[in-house]
Image 1 (cartoon, rainbow, N blue to C red):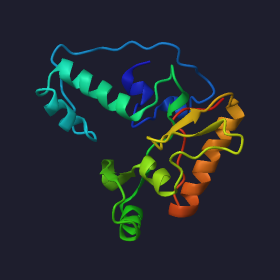
Image 2: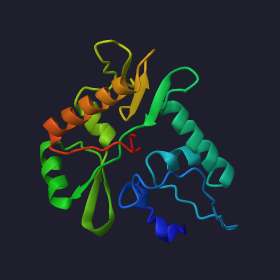
Image 3: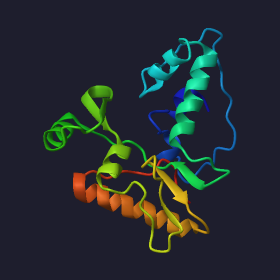
Length: 185
C-alpha cells in the first residue's frame, strides 16, 4: 500500500479505522530523500539541537536520543509500554474553555482550526505521575506521565487497568477522553 492509501496522520492511519482487525503491519519500506528537510519545532528539540552546534542529520539524531533518554525509562532497567496515550485533538472552543480554567495548559495548533492538548500535561495535573496500582506492579512513570511502566511482574491486564484508571481520571477532570496509541488486541 502506498503512503496515501495508508492515510497516515498524527499517530493515525487507515489501519486504526476501516482496516482495523483486518491487517497486521509486520514490515514497511521507507523512501527517503537525499535532501533532508529538517522539522525541528517539536517541544524542546530546537534548543537541544542548538546545544549540539546547530541542525544537521547527526545533531538532530543525537538531540532526539538525548531528549528521549532524559524522559523515558530504559527498557533494559524497567519494562514499559512507551508513550502510551495520544495527545487528543479538540475543537478550538473546547481548548479555549480549558485554557480559561487552566491557564498553563499545554496546547499545540492542529489542522483546520483544531487544537492538540498535551495528554501528559493532563495526566500530570490529575496527580498521576508516579501512580502505582494497589499491587505495586504497574503504574505511571515518575518522570513522564505518558509512559506506563511494569514495576515487576505486572500482567497485561494490570497495565490495561492502569491505562483505564488514567483515562477515567483525565475524563473526570477535563472532560476529554484520551486514547491509547497502540491498538490493544
